[in-house]
Length: 457
Image (cartoon, rainbow, N blue to C red; front, side, top):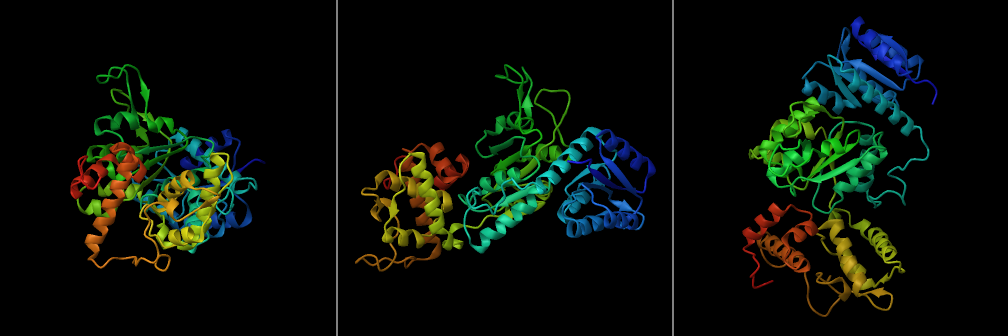
């Protein structure tokens, strides 16, 4: 790449000079502007690889410049320079399309990392060899429904930003796949993607797991240990089932996000961290905020941009394509040819509601692959699915003649019992199959009165 050029927009001469000197040492040419009017003139006459703009300018708001560049010059990442501690303004800038932000007084190591990441983003945008969500064979999020097209389009936009993303959707809809794709398409793709299930870590070990610890800081700490934030340095940290974080950890996570500093357990000094945060949950996080179970300020920091993963029952037109893809993948794993699907089996899957979404479809096909004969998967190979009307002499209906609450309870009970049976009543394994935390599984079993001696088991 030829020498990159950055546009610096700030009305303070000292700040402009500091930024110009720092970028010059990184072999980056600079053009300076004191206000919005000068910035617009510069943008119209030159191409920039990066723009650093102050939030407050003499003739307007820096966020207005973010919106203009985002619309008119989408290939130019904009990083905002904000007042120290003003996270609300920083979040507003990120929502408007800013790539990232840096606070005054400017921390030069942080600035250098930000600039390097922005330049990699520019290279990624101009590369013709990278994976894009539209690549049929490469993209893990498959389906031609309008809802999936919208998801892939939003992922493309999110990959260009460093803004925190919160992914919502039912269990099994592909939230982690979406998070990985955002990482892979972005400028951090040469750094680690670290995923952690917040519901699977015991509360007493959570701080150590996330932030690390020093030798001797507690019983069993026989050596220094780096935390997941350190493991993800320069890359992306994916906090799955973030709703399961205890309130005590929510406070500490909030500070890390705001200050970009972590303190290992037992350490006397904080360590600077550079990670992009992507979180996810199948729970209603806004309701947990209302119920006092999740901090509103943390929710505000995590949910800068929301990505909603649609359930499989809301995109049934994607089921045949998913079946073909999953069967080919399963068969390839076993180095065998993919079997055909009997028309009754296909019809049953098309009419099934899939409470476990794509993950459940995959599990059903895994089971069928182990049972099929004569190169064809039959209806019987699929297991205990509700058979659609017209495929049997028996009368089946999609929704029984009972109230909705009883119907949903019965369905939930059946799913839980099936997962327990398939896991030989290993509750940790069953929770993993269902994509929920162990604590959530235990609560659901208690609510439904299910235990190891359940007569229906």
